[in-house]
Image 1 (cartoon, rainbow, N blue to C red):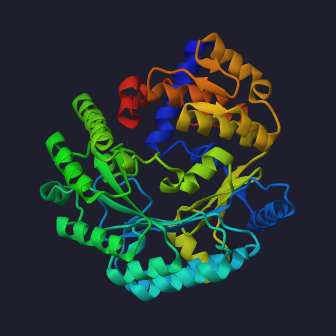
Image 2 (spheres, rainbow, N blue to C red):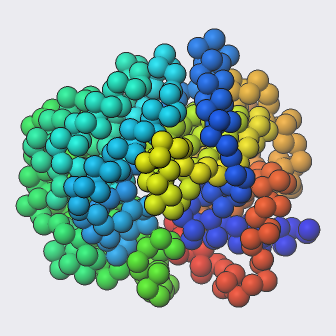
Image 3 (cartoon, rainbow, N blue to C red):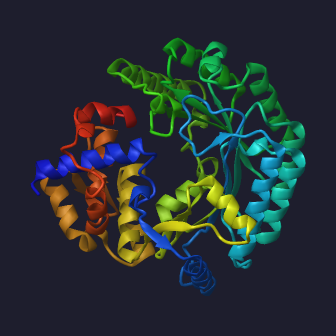
Length: 465
């Protein structure tokens, strides 16, 4: 395969992964094609636990991600694994199954969980007693004594003072308050049941509770969103002085109602989205620079940081949650929600699919995530994790990129030289293994109509700046 053919293939891979829901972690989800046995997964967790306790895997900062898939409505732009469900009986059934999943896993209680994250969906949709029951089950089942961060997502229209009290009593020290926009007319069009008064009340209640870090999520480039509306929302949020503000560009992935109902972005939409992001970042730097997400590690999503920087293991609980057992497996439960419930009702672990891992794939993942997240690899961290020099292990890949003037080597870092973020995500894929590329080639055919006008399609899903 010559350079042009390889570049076209990698562009197709980058587009396909983002359209289908994301290219993290590596190996990507669409390459998880093995049917795995629960006993093998359980043994792998037991083995990694023993390795951590013995000191052989002391760098592994194990995290837990717990997924609550329920929402009040399905927002038009939402790309999360979620669906509307307000019935208490259904929430209770799901919680029953979560508890059974935790019991069947029988996780080693001496292992310190370093990060705990509850996402969704809308975790704050649970009523008080169910939320408290969930927190108590987690506290009894896992060792959170050394947790660096306990974090949850909440919505302004489901959070209450009593729920905040339950979360703070559990030890939650960071919340992400999903606001997206304060434009009431736009919110109605997007099927989001939110009002400005709800946002202000939620924020003030969180501040009053002593919550350590409050992050606010906004979106740029939403369908029918005007630049003036975006700026107005951001200026109102800046007045609140949250600890961090995260601006998420709208990407029309296959999970969104926007895409599934036949809508598409055009170049004017993409350029408007880029302008919003640029203006937004500039305003945050000028008015509230402390709210920049990467200002301090404590203010970041530490679970994501540990996973990408240190290849840390991650236990995913609930339907829709992926897991990573370092050096052994990436896996998830069957994506059919009823399969999850039916199996656990019978005290049987749900069907599992995933991909086996080894040290080489972990090393590749570390390089790819470092390049995509920071545009450079820290050679000292790589050596600490794997006791090897990446330039020697992946000589062929680095030589290819050096010949293209895409690599700058310094004493402690290896920098990927790109003109924009789209290129960053394309050239980092030079480190995909032959095994993973073979799986992707069976799914992706660059000659298909789907991959025509590829540069435009990539621009829909990646920031160019």
